[in-house]
Image (tube, rainbow, N blue to C red; front, top):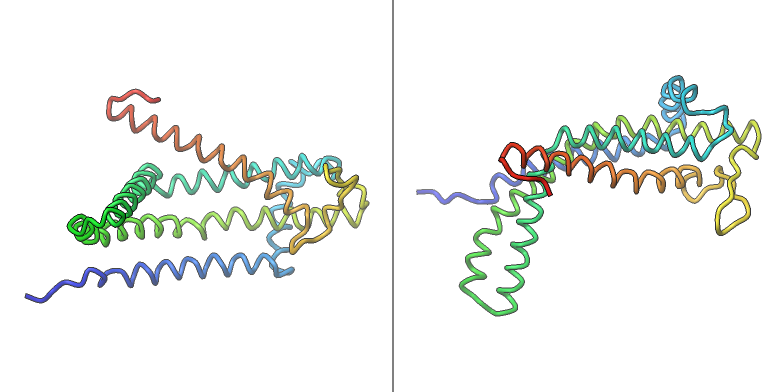
Length: 224
């Protein structure tokens, strides 16, 4: 009987993962191309500017609302396309497996090391499958993220051209900062990203808690 190579099925998933990474990277690079950015930003601006533009009078509030909108939509889409409960379970199983393997190596338990090493391919396969599902959602969420970031980018510079005072904010480390100043990207975009990080964590954890609650209710348990 021919031996089955456990790694034989690993190559197609790796190729798919590279493809999704390439698509996501290409979309990120497109963000730095001004013609592409302007098209996306102006298209979204027809909707967002009347709703949250506030005629440029409250730039920080505009950034906050745009950030919450972007993170909220992308997190909801990602949660609908991935099984976060299975993903969390796989992560905990992998962490427990790695801890057992480290312990076996520290104790020089050769029998246990052999058994765990035999199981390692199965664990790696589950981890890769979970990563693949996450990678598949990236191009979809980028379709939400990129137009909103593009609008913020051109919105900040449009306000600057109108009146630099509209994009000048006070921060703890300086009396005033222009949001058009750059550290690779405009400071306004960096502020926008900083705003979205904590909100994204709140939305993500809230969705996971809701899914956990629903799963427990189906199993007849009581949510913590």
